[in-house]
Image (cartoon, rainbow, N blue to C red):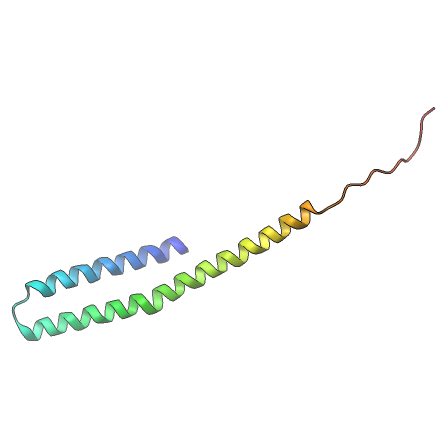
Length: 89
């Protein structure tokens, strides 16, 4: 999940970069304004939604990792005892 979110963020970054390159070569001011607004929306979308999903996914991974470490610690804390059942003479 984390990798797919990171891929989406890099894809959005590529779109933003493309739009910025287009904006540099546009001669008409009205069209340039439209492209600049599109860039702004893409950046806002990237920052807010995708990054929050990424942080949530990272938090979920951390929670699962902590639970796994707790389970391993419990297993390691088990004590082994030896009890003599009978003696052969």
